[in-house]
Amino acid sequence: MKHFIIELTYTAPTERIEAAVAEHRAYLQKGYDAGLLLCSGPQVPRVGGVIVARGESREVIERFFADDPFNTNIVASYRIIEFDPVKRQPFLEGWI
Image (tube, rainbow, N blue to C red; front, side, top):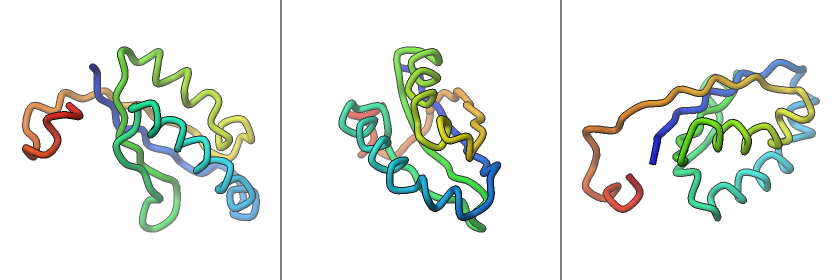
């Protein structure tokens, strides 16, 4: 498996983002259910979000986020960063 940090940056007014949050979080749940996502949440201050993900390839992650309501509603841009988690907490062994 390959591992990724996905950084979302909001590109729309707050009211458009808020209108898409419930649908975005419901969509992310599909990623959790499929074992693609480990954690996610808004940045502080709230200028975007951060997601930790894994997948067979970068293309798998790109395809998943192509259908994210934040993307389809054009309220956020995505930066996908692949990384190699060589050091980690023991409780993550099953996920890594």
